[in-house]
Structure formats: C-alpha cells, structure tokens
Length: 259
Image (cartoon, rainbow, N blue to C red; front, side, top):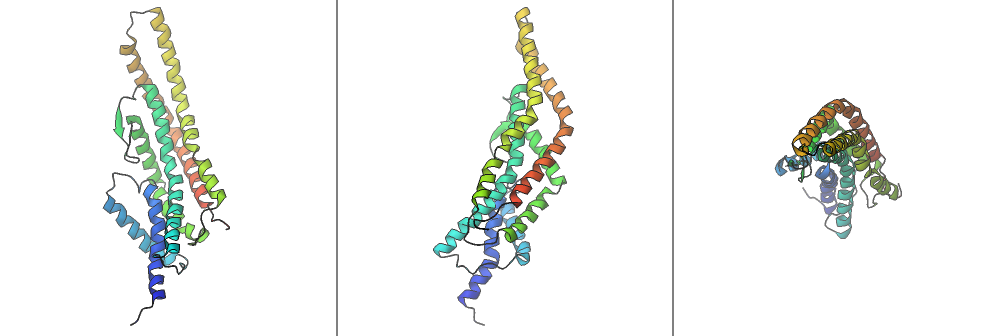
C-alpha cells in the first residue's frame, strides 16, 4: 500500500486542526483549565474530545502544517479557540471581582488563599463564590455546552487562513467589561451596607473614645457580611444563568473575517 503526501496531509489535518482549536479553548475555558486538574488529565481530555468530535466535523483543508502557511494557520486556530475560552472564563472572573470587593469590606482581605482557577492569591470569600459558581455551572451542564459550542464553531468558523473578524474582536473586548460591571452590581449591596456600619462605628467611637473599635468593629463587620451574603445567595443563581447565556451567545456570534 502506497500513501501519497496529499493523503498523509489529509489524515493529519483530519485530527490536527480540530486538536489545535480544542487545545486553545480548553487552555482557558472554565472547569477544564482549573489548576487543580493535573496536566496529564487535561491533555488526555483534549485528545479524547478531539477524537470524538473530529468525525462529525466538516472536511478539513489540505494544508501542510510544516510550511509557513501551516504555521500561520496553526496560530490562527489556537487564537480562535483561545478567544472563545477567554469569554467563558470571564464568568468566574466576575465572581472573583465581586468576592474581592465584598471580602475587603468585611475585613477578610488578610485571609488569602490560592485560587485554583487562576493560580493567584485571592480572599477566601472568592474561593467560596467560585466554588458555588462552579457547582452551578456543572449542574447546568455548562461543561457539555462548552464542547457543543466548540463543535458548532467549526461550522460557523471553518478551518481556513482567515482570522477573526473585527466585529468578533470588538465584541470580545466589549465583553471584558462584564467582569467589573457584574462584579460591582453583585457586591454593591453588601459593600454599601458595610460602609454604613463602619460610618456608624465611627460616630460611636467619636462619642465614646474609650471604645475599642477594632475589637468590636471587625467581628460585627464579618458577621453582618456573612449574613448579607447568605441572603444574597439565592439571587446569584439567576445572575449566573444570565451571565452564562450572554457568554455563550457572544461566542456563538463569532465569525471569521469576510464571513
């Protein structure tokens, strides 16, 4: 049996181009990119998803990945997947921003822990909210929606030399503001309430200087903060659902330049 160079490129491209885009997305996609998941497991997950997804995709272009055009195409596919995963990653970044604002107001800014999603130190309260968001995300089959959205992207953005359109890049940049807008909208009720409490303690301390504000203020701020957080938890579910719908809609609207 003889195998031509064209047939070899076709066999390689059948799995290689989907693998690059899948890798780019899962590098930053929520749940899959968590640092607590070993690298070997993430690589195996990427390979398995590619093997299962490849037979259902449209035909891949016959492009030698070892040429200059192939290298540019490789970078293009990786960036497309990276942009898609980045939008979905911002869902959890918004929770981190909200938790940091609330934690600082509650006096928990000194209690830091490593965030498994980003690998940086964040207030312990951020760990709680990110874990809560992850459980909701999995319960809503968000991980399956990521794979389905990734598969559909090969039909709306077929493998080619065309990069993302300017509209897609602009929507990606515009979407990044959701981190701060949603984080502030979530944290502002607790932040404002704790601010009023601190102002009240300031007035009390002015009237009674012998009162140790640190011995009284910190416990009250923490207790009231957790009480307010407990009240606000039921409202986080619909907010997260709305955020997920908006994120997946933004990704599904991505198009290639000239498409």
